[in-house]
Image (tube, rainbow, N blue to C red):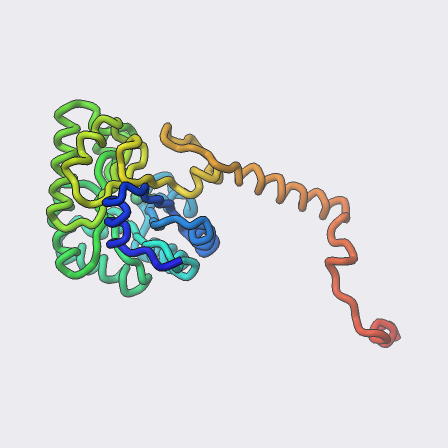
Length: 277
Ligand code: KIV
Ligand code: NA
């Protein structure tokens, strides 16, 4: 497969072909995304919760996100690779945003960075783009500032809130964002937004009108213990499969069924006898 580019994703939008995005946080996850033939991989700060065990995305550090992104980079060849800039690493100033984005590009080899919200993030997006680094915007439910949004709940549910959301998305596009992620908004809001944007729109809990969809790896594979959002569809139950596998191993160790002769090594002829002498 030829490498996917941001230009190829814009082309997909023009052709009306849905864009497939999934998150990944490590080398095997990246290999799965590669083999499954997705268009785009996001090293989301959702990894703070799915692989690092924090109870929100807020505490994850730049160093931690860089380590996850480097692991994904090693397992990925074809899809576009986007990395989330974590909470607190870009909001303070354009200089902070550019410096953090440059660290991600230099140290991980990601193709683009993602930042959350409209507001002050519009100027940050413009600054990062001006520094030559593609930016993905993210509006609607923005988990880094979920507390200010009243928790993990759908956004844009009033006409005023929906219009404000559309304005943010348009401002992010005008700032040079290559793509916009829209999370947890009524399908009507996404439908209203689509004709306002030329860049691809990737939805998560944003209905069918978006140009593509993104889901969290651990959510869609059933690997994450804890309440899943309404928009999550489970395509596999890997957590149950993993527990069954480890429990079967534990049982065989305890009953001495494992290891069997075929799992062991032998010595060359005569060596066992010499050893016993
Ligand atoms: O961190 C993440 O996984 C995300 C996607 C859900 C868009 O930001
Ligand atoms: Na994120």
